[in-house]
View 1 (cartoon, one colour):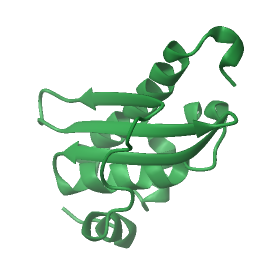
View 2 (cartoon, helix red, strand yellow):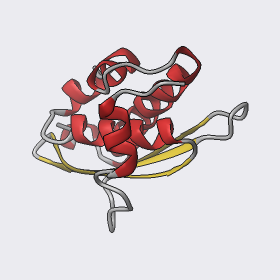
View 3 (cartoon, rainbow, N blue to C red):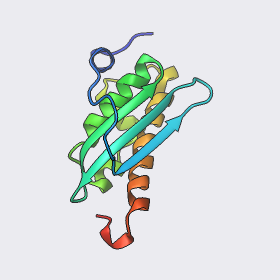
View 4 (cartoon, rainbow, N blue to C red):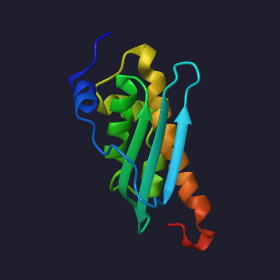
Length: 128
């Protein structure tokens, strides 16, 4: 299985590893078939993702995807972050082997769940 330079870089030097203390939103997604589990923590300031961290149990692709999606989400509005797709993540990583594309689904879904968790924690008039 061949991995792009970007995948290897994010796997060997993952960005934004860990948890945020008192996060504004947390999302978790897993795949029972492969066993990968991703958890994304977000901090939202004025409707923008100011910080984003991850904890992942999984293969090298899962770690690289978690690292990449946190980088992609930072600085984006909630609406922009919700629009990030599995294809966007895979593209930013220079592609993924077909048998690893399911990992990019996990990253996008965990981010979406973190945003949904943030919105569920706030009264509707405060969600930006």
